[in-house]
Length: 234
Image 1 (spheres, rainbow, N blue to C red):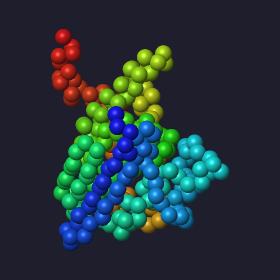
Image 2 (cartoon, rainbow, N blue to C red):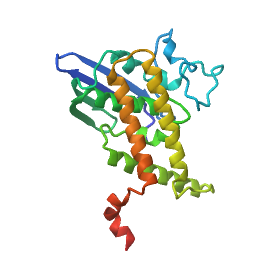
Image 3 (tube, rainbow, N blue to C red):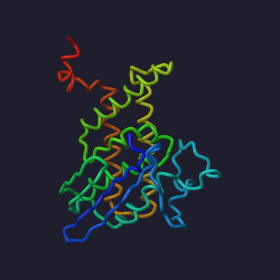
Image 4 (tube, rainbow, N blue to C red):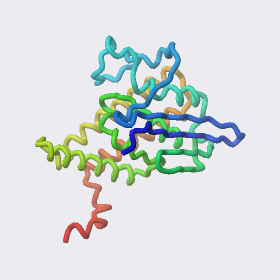
């Protein structure tokens, strides 16, 4: 695979003709977003500002929250935006282009999700494979499929390295418990800086995806796609 930096470009074109663009560059090995943020950083990006109660980071070593720094640009840009405002969202990934007439909320949810997963937060590290194969505007079913295939492939890799695989998906539930706590804490963090609802609802959308994954795991909702795998059952 190429060792060139991975570039994702998000462009929002609004009904009044104005636009906002976000250029994300990721390290090809670590899949961490390369930040170019001038200091001083806003107070709300400090690790101790509404810090997640389960955060494993130490503010003496990490004074700023990696997720907060990664979403600083979109939060600042859309601080006064309302969820239902319309925009044409153009996305360029290393492999293809996307475009969707939608709401700021939906476009922002896709952008913020990518920024969070490429931040270096220990709880978001599990989503790194989905960062590399980013799928904007994914439905709940698409997200569930991608999460499960990612997790089961990870278990196959663990098995090959002599580690105990989790074929019953028990640890996946815990992973998403931690992600849901992070989403909840970040909603409170952003409420404290009085952003309008576009950014808040973008986080709520991400949390809805996390809920749908947990719901599917806990209530065996995978029956909906079982028939697709008939050839493997013979």
